[in-house]
Structures are given as structure tokens and as C-alpha cells.
Length: 490
Ligand code: 8ZB
Image (cartoon, rainbow, N blue to C red; front, side, top):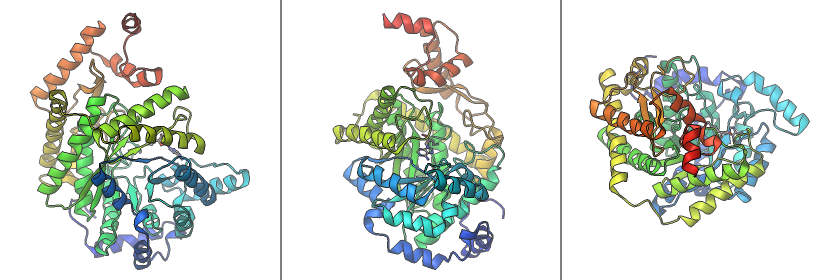
């Protein structure tokens, strides 16, 4: 099939579906009608889209962890701990790396060894291997809405299985689950495969079942300028809406600069709603704020500082939900106890800030205006390159470096753009590569970096980028030269 941003007909979808279900034995005999019937029996309290809308209307921020282990029993124990001890509002099932690469055969050994040793030998839950039977058993054992969280360029079979199992949200997208996660998968391929996932949700919608979809906002999680991730979010939102998705949660990864983080989430929600309205799509838009996705401090007390700053930014921005980090982040996959601690620290912060928002100010307005203008430059050019088609435009934009994600492993990403922090810690563009910004926007970014250079007594250079990548793990936000840090301490 040729990629274009047009809703797949039911016949087109069903023609592809047979091959998808044959990819692994748990997909055989998966009847859509029975899957929809099971979804209809899911109680309101376990419906993701309803929980998000409720939070948005109440003006509160929900907390959700990440969590995944190899076995159904282990996953139930883990999620019940996060629900009961951690006080999570929403539950995840983080999928393992083999499943994300469709390597289901290699999951078998991992599952067996995990059963034999009593500890997880996979870094997540292999939902395709467990099939509808295992995934429903998990769903029925917990008391909160369940979402698949992964990083899968081709998530078609995975999506079929988890939606047939009563899970009511699915994370991912054709750009956000390819460029940061894969080296050589083409964008045409991943965009088509995510059109399938979105069209599947569209079919559930046609049969009266609301399924939430969440593009992955943080991308590479490392110094991503807000306008770049917001542009990708709006783009993936538009593509999903075309396939019939009605409940969309757009994401953003904490940059660490409080005012810029608040600005980014606020303008993301506003600007997305404008694009969806102009596109003629009726969708429920909510937002998700990801606590710091970059390198973490090893020290657990310091890690809690990062977690709580993220919770604060999410609350002050008015994000609908926050994805929580843990004190074990620098070490790897957290224990269930450490995971619960991250949620407890987050919930304490959220409750103390309940009812508070960052007040409008000229500085906040200016930051929002800059992000909005940059995002519009990017999306206008995607539209132009695609001759009015956002799917074709997305492919051409990455080819041309018009969309460019920093530090991405994909060979389909130009990697010519470089970000760095300005003197107050906000993320700016240092190298523009082929980004289609106006001269005014380029000059403004440059001036802010020159201000930092003067303060630090060194030129704007790649060394700033490197220093910024490691700064948070070493205890600061801006990566200053050693002599600047020691003088400013005195
Ligand atoms: C792109 C997302 C990376 C984040 C966490 C990592 C990191 C990955 C699991 C997990 C709990 C898992 N993560 N796999 N957290 N359980 N199985 O996702 O630590 O924060």
C-alpha cells in the first residue's frame, strides 16, 4: 500500500489484518467482534479516556508509572503494588525489547528462565507471547485503567492483542516509535504500520468503544527543543485522527527549565486543538508530562529532587497526567519498591500544588509565543513538502532535515540540528541544520546562546552541548565550565 494521509477503508484494513494475525500463534483466530464485545464489558473505572477527561475537567494531574516484567504472575504482583502501595492513578504495561522488535521466539526463553529463577529475565512484559488469555488475566486482576507502553515501530499484532484484552490505551506513533528507537526502519514503513494501529482504534470507535492513543512526546529524551517535539506530536495526532482516533494524549518530556516546561505543555494543548479543528477532526485532547528522560544522578536522594521538580512542572502546567521516574533510574529497571517510592514522592508534590498554576506573565507569554512560532514554521514546511499531505510530508521532512531529532539512532534522521541550553537553562537551537525557521527566530535563539557564552567566558560551541547532556546527572541543569561553577558558588 502507498503511504498517504487518508483513512483506510475497512476492506483495506482487513486485507492487511490476516497477515498481521499470522505473525505469531496467539494472533490466530483473533475475532474483532469478540474483542469489541469484551471491551464493552470494561467498567468505567478502568477506561483510560474517561479517567483522563475526568482529570482534565477537575483540573488535576494523574500519576502513572512505567513497569514491566516477564510473567503474568509477576506483572500482577508488580501492578498491584504500584496501585495499592504507590497510589498510582493509571497503570502501564511496559513491553520488553524483544517484543518491540517482533522477536517473539526469543521471548520464550526469557519467560521460561524467569519462571525458573523467580526473577524477570526480560526488561518488560511480552504481551504477544502471553496472548489474549494472559493479557486478560492481568487486566482482570488490577483495578485501574491499563495502557501498553513500548517503543515498537511495527506494533500491529501487539495492538490487536492488548486491545482485545481490555487495555484501553496504547502508546506510540510512526515517528515517535521509530526515529528514537530504530536504526534502519523506514518512515514510510512505520507510518503505514501505525496507520494500521490507529485504524484499529478507529474500528473500535465505530463500534462504540473509546480507546485512548498517546504519541511518545520525549523522542530521544535528550535536549529536545519543545517546538520539535510539539511539531511531531501535532503531526502524529493529525495522522491518528484521520484514521478515526478520538481520544489523544499528547506528550512532552521535561526539559528542566520550569517556565519553558510550563509554556511547552500549554502551547502544545492549544496549538494541537487549533490544528485538529482546522483539519475538521473532533478529538478529545489531553496532555502528558514525562519526568526527566535524560541522564539521572546515581544518588537516590538527588534523583528524588529531579522527580519532584518534574511533578511540580506537570502540576503548574496543568498537564492531565505525569509519567513518573524512580530513584533507581540511573541504575536500570527499578524494583517495585523503588517504583512505588517515585509515585509517592510525585503524588505528595501534586497534592500540595493542587489548585495552583503558574500565573500568566510576559515571560511565560513570550516563551509560549516562541514555541508556537517555531512549531508553525516546522508544520508549514511539512505541509508544503507533502503537497498538502502530512504523511508524505513527514517522510520528506525527515529526508530534508526539516524535522530533525537530536541524538536519534535512526539513519532516516538528518542529525544536523544541535540543541544547547541558554543562560537560564531553557533549551535552544545551537545548530539549525535544515530547519525552516525565519531569520528572526534563528537570531533570537543565537542571541540567547551568546548571552550564556559571555557569562561563561567561552564561545558557543559543541562543548556546551556535551556539558549540558551530563549536567543533570552531575547535579546541575546547565553544563557550566568548572571555573564558572566554583566562582558562582562563592
Ligand atoms: C523510553 C522510556 C525509558 C524509561 C523505564 C526506564 C526509563 C523501561 C521498564 C522501565 C520500569 C520496566 N523502563 N522498562 N521502568 N519497568 N520494565 O522507561 O527506566 O525510565
